[in-house]
Image (cartoon, one colour):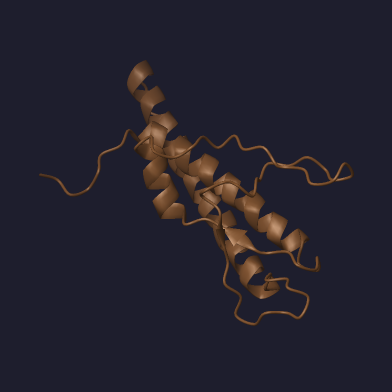
Length: 138
């Protein structure tokens, strides 16, 4: 028995790209709220959520935000999303904000590079399939 799960490269690439984009929004939200008193930084365990997504055990990427005030702007992240975890701060602030700008910026940059990588993987998969369909080298 093969210990490595076999997924269709096209569906895997699509799920990975959607999840990377979702994570980028979470990290951007953390950075945008770095000065908001009481804000708790959130993140996901990418590998765990991707595996659950590929096995059909994870909710879709379409998530709506719960608005707690009429003046709030609508967004994509909800506090009830089970995929979102709270980040444990290295150095908590007095106002209760758990965003560490350096950590968030580092994770944001790393995720940006990995998003480009996922896009390249998906693009290569599409090119190879088009080559197989048309019979011409890509």
